[in-house]
Image (cartoon, rainbow, N blue to C red; front, side, top):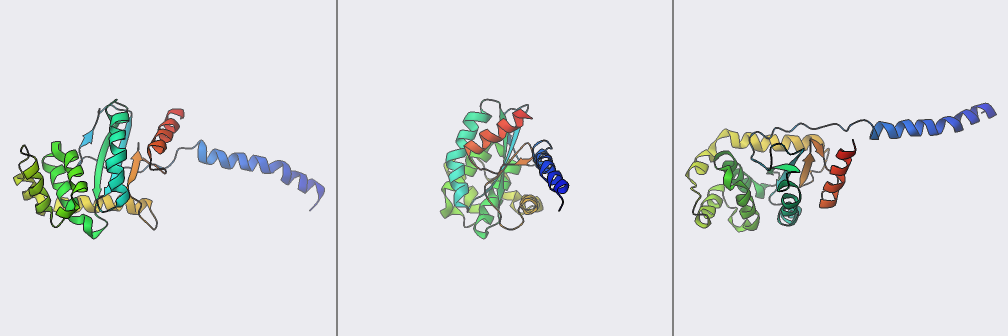
Length: 208
């Protein structure tokens, strides 16, 4: 290689590095469109940020997230009008099938109980023998809730359709192992699933 060629390589390298950085910072990340029309959304409809959260009931990290981080998300972002949140239950693990069916039946019929019902499911894994058992036990603890309509829809094909839809979204974004919980903010997947990760992502959006 001649001296001129070496100089050309040395001087052009920073240019290629700069272009490479621009490619990943200046251009927007690919969005994932998620249909949340069948799920209740909590918060101000005009909130600038939409959180979509996928949770797997049998996942220990999801249990921790739901008990510890989700209340902070509601206090810090939902109750202040910064964000609105949709929660999508998953059934990747066999143990999660019954609670997921119960959650979706509640979601489709009496979604005013949806959020406390999710917490009830997470806190009572001993009831996961069947979706009927979960709904009936929740009714025993919640006098305002009437389980009849939710029990009727359990055999509806829409339940299976929603389970398959949630799984199809996660199958598209994860090539091998599925990670739960999964969070999307304005259709972009959050890499760091934590309160700090959310703060950093919102800051990134505000800087665009």
